[in-house]
Image (cartoon, rainbow, N blue to C red; front, side, top):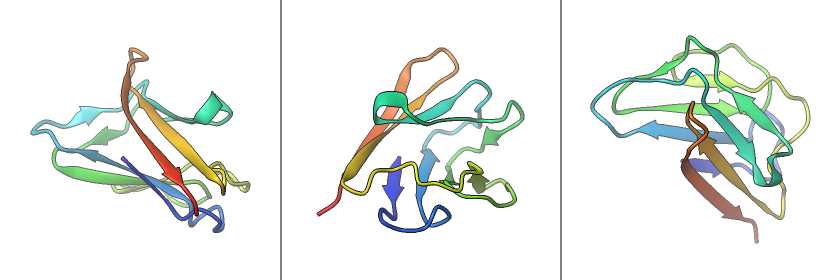
Length: 103
């Protein structure tokens, strides 16, 4: 998981999630939160991340595709001084986290 574009517009902020496995993963019930869980993105029940694929979740608004999802926010999620993104599966288990510190 990667977090990018701090200090940018809502549509330039993003989190990338990569399925490194050999099977597609249904993201039904999965979520991404920031540090302190002030903001939570819940994947749609119909979204599936294909094997060996990456999806980019943008903070702003746009049209969802297989490789691009949009949170639909106008305000930033990721703190300019640094933040952590947490990815949880449908059972609430932490699958991945990534901390970004801005200099």
